[in-house]
Length: 153
Image (cartoon, rainbow, N blue to C red; front, side, top):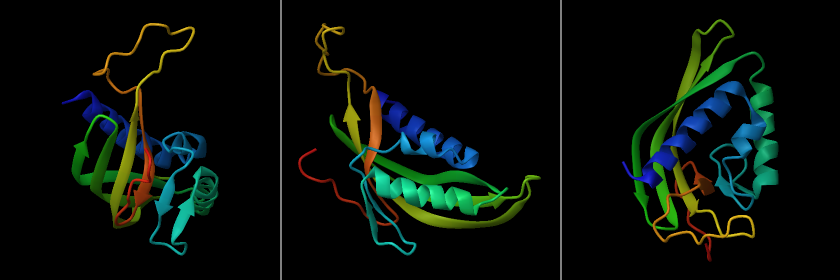
């Protein structure tokens, strides 16, 4: 498993944990500030993290005492040095406060992800080698169907 694949797995795990905990801050840390999210519910797209955060807050608040267990199946990735694309079938299972499954739904997910590595600063003077593992990989586009990378990355 490559470093990018490991980073992608951490993003998926963090997504699952943030949704289950209904933790808006943890959820939003996964997204780039300039994210564009295409949604299959009500609003065609959310431009930027502020708009997406308002939607996520509404979603989590609407759950009341329920929790949502997220599972990813048929995960496929394609990555390069600066970007990666992830697609998956996502199951969202609503669970009561007692843990019993109330309902579930499946959706398609496609994420365009930006790979970033630490950049030299005054405190971090050594140059970063070209093949350094990513320090962060975050969705810059998200869709229930298809997303395209904005130009330039």
